[in-house]
Length: 478
Ligand code: SF4
Image (cartoon, rainbow, N blue to C red; front, side, top):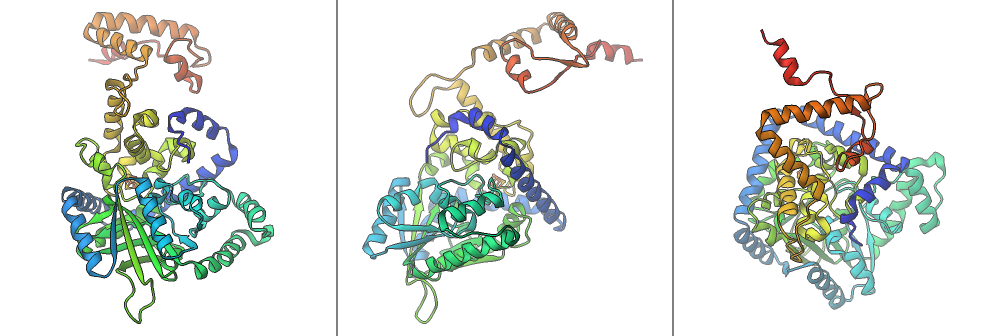
C-alpha cells in the first residue's frame, strides 16, 4: 500500500467531511468503549491484572533474544520449521519460496496485521498465487481493494449497504435488504468454504508465541483461523518477534486482558493453541513453518525511550478511546497501524520522513494509556517523538530538524515573558483587551495571527474574562 502518513491533516480533513464514515466510526467506537467498560467492571482487580500484563510483556522483552531461541528450539522439537526474516521483503520471499517448493496454488489467510505490514497479499498475487483473506472484514476489504482501518475490526469504516454493493459487484451475489447482515454473512460463508477446502496453504499471524512450549496462540471470533490452520496441508505463521511470552501460564493473564480490552468479551469465541504440525492420526497440517519477523523491531528494541511500545498486544482499545481516532478513523494515519499506538510505532517503522506528523495526531489526553491492558506510556512516547521531530535531524536521511518558525518564536516569547511577572501581566492585559474588543456574543472569531489562525479556524475561542485570574484571585483572598 502507498504510505500517506505525512498527509495526516489532509487525510483527516477528508474523513471529517465524510458523513457515512463519521456515522460508522461513532457506532463502532462507541460500542467497543461501552463493551470494554462493562467487561472490565465485572472483573474485580482489573487494574492489578493490567499491572501483571505489563510485567509479563516487559519481562519477555527483557529476555527477548534468549526466549526467541527457546521458542525456535521448541518448535523444531515438535516437528515444525523456523525461519528468520530481517525485513518485509525477506518474509514475503520466504512464503513465496515455500509455496513454490510445495506446489501450492491457492492460499487462505486469517487476519494478521503483521502480514499487512509486510504487504504479503500483494507479493503473493504478483508471484501468481491465488490468496484469499478469510476474516470477514478482511475479505470485504480484499474484494474492494481497500485496506484495514482498525487493528481488530478492519472494515469498521464500511456500512452494511456498502458491503452488499461490494458483494454484488465482485461476487455477483445479491443480498435482499430484508436479509440484512445474516444474509451477507451467509454469502461470505458460502464462498469462503470452497476456498478453505481447495487451499493447500494457510497463513496466519499470532497473538502470542509461547517460548517454553513452542505454542502459537491465535484468538478469533469467526473460526476462520481454526479452519486456515487445520484444513490446508501447510500452515505458515508470520510472527513479529515481540509476540513472544515466556510461559504457558502467562496466557492466564494475557487472555483475560486481550478480549476484554478489544471487544469487551470475557473470551473470544475461539482460542487456538497450535503446537507443532499434526501428528499421525490427528487432523491438521502436515507441515508447520514459523517465520519470525524483525522488520525494524530490533531497532525499536534498542531504543530505551520507545521500546515499551513492543509490549503492544494489538487489542485496539487505545484506538476506540482516542478522540482523534474516533473522528478521523484509521485511514487518515496513512499506514497499517492507526490510532495512538500507530502514531507511536509507525514513525519508528517508517522513519520520520513519513511518520513525523503522526506524533501530533493526539490531544495528549491520556485516554490511550488509561485503557491499555499492558500500560504502554503512549502520551510520553508521543512527546518523546515530538521532541525528536523538533530537535533532531531526520534519522533516516539526515534532513534538517522540522521546526515551525512561528511556533518556535511563540515559545521563545513565552519563555521570556514567563521570567518577568510585570512583562507577563502587561502582555496578557493587552492581549485580553484586544480579544475582548474583537469578541461578539461571548466568542472571539478567527484570529488572524500565525499559529492562532490555524487553532481558531475550527474552534470557538471563548471571550476572555473581564479580569485576569490573578486579579480575581487577589479580590477573593481575605
Ligand atoms: S497500545 Fe495498548 S491499548 Fe493500544 S493496541 Fe496496543 S495493547 Fe492495545
